[in-house]
Image (cartoon, rainbow, N blue to C red; front, side, top):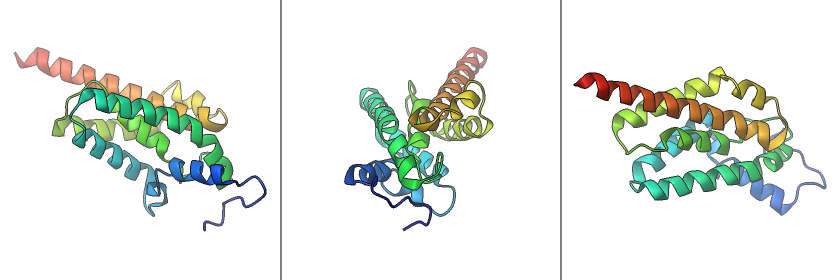
Length: 164
């Protein structure tokens, strides 16, 4: 068990479940770059789910779950936006791919764009990150996903326009 986990009377089976979901069922315990590992899992879902409705439902469910569990997971780990909580990265990466059919170019471009926007904290992500609990944990990643999605759509629109 990690030394930063809070063990007290507030840790209930529900809190443990929230921490498990928040860590994306253990992906957040990857020793190197757990957030990127969660994004790779989202990229895998994008690759596997060819049906846009199924992908949209997965994205919506993931966002709702991320919001519901992140605050409790944060209390479980005892640290603000603990690195083990990666469901927000997973969800933000899924947002990046919304509205796209799978292509290798979208997969790779979307992955790197999301990671870039997640690290840069482009407004309003910078302000959302400072909020407490689930709002702060999930909010900045949703914004990063929206920025990455918009840039992807714009880029591929411009490529189609200039392609002839």
